[in-house]
Length: 391
Image 1 (tube, rainbow, N blue to C red):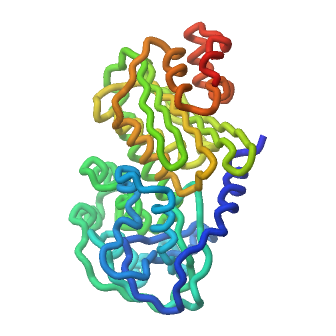
Image 2 (image 1 turned 45 degrees about the vertical axis):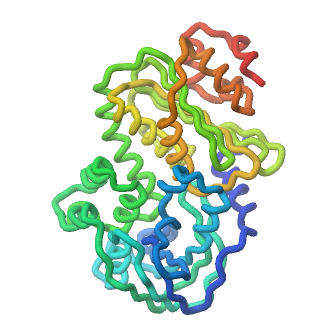
Image 3 (image 1 turned 45 degrees about the horizontal axis):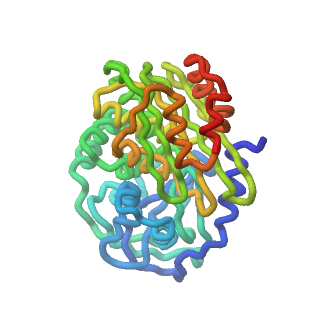
């Protein structure tokens, strides 16, 4: 069977015909604030700002936390992103002393949009879509780059000047203070966190998963100290051509993420799954950043409620779905966890309830999900018990 990575390459290739904003070799505009650090050729990487060819407040264009809450459509989100122009220049991740990198840091630490002026080496072209990071519009090399000074976010500024604070402590502390995840991740990616001698640029894709993991690990340490819930709960949410269902089980912490892609490209019905027990995975999940961002979102809710539970999350993506980054999972699972929970006596009734709003038969998720399958076996259920939940 095709792996998730290969499938997503096919899926992202199908989006490349989408048109982005057209600009010339020189541009004035406003950065949301936003930066992007590439990973190709690491430790020498392409880094630069992302700027909209318009003036004023462009924050909405790079604030994923607001998109689901405001019920933005997929078309609106893609419109925001394809109107961001990426400038890029090759830098070494350890070279934080250049004025160019300092400007990227100023952008990432800003509390509001930053007025910018850019001269490109060629006319920016293309679009970029990924399951790991949000899309953006055309890109080109930078010849000249100027920004107006802005006010820094006071929480980020405090961490920037604390050169004795480890990155993990900075990230967890900012999350606890309610700083948006996207703001934390961008500041981390441009080397503004951590002990002075250890600071360096972190590619955007890596920094997202790193922040999800560091926050999730700290939350898990606390969640494991909480009492276990005493019922089966289901939280659901749907948006952007996706259905999500979070099953919380009356067990100690264990976790499984299963995602189905249903006729997105053609007639395919693909299901991918990965899991962990009481101890976290030691190897990187073959499902990529979605695995870690979903885990973090569920642990956020459990920590907030001061509870512990096992968690199985089911997702199905339908025709019309476009890869737009792991924010899609994080913010939708967060939204699901804010919905009223439905309570059930057992796993069978929980899955039967989910089947009412899902298209894929629950038996497919059971077949692919090792933890779900083992949970059913332990409850002495038979696969035939779920035939009524199959359609």
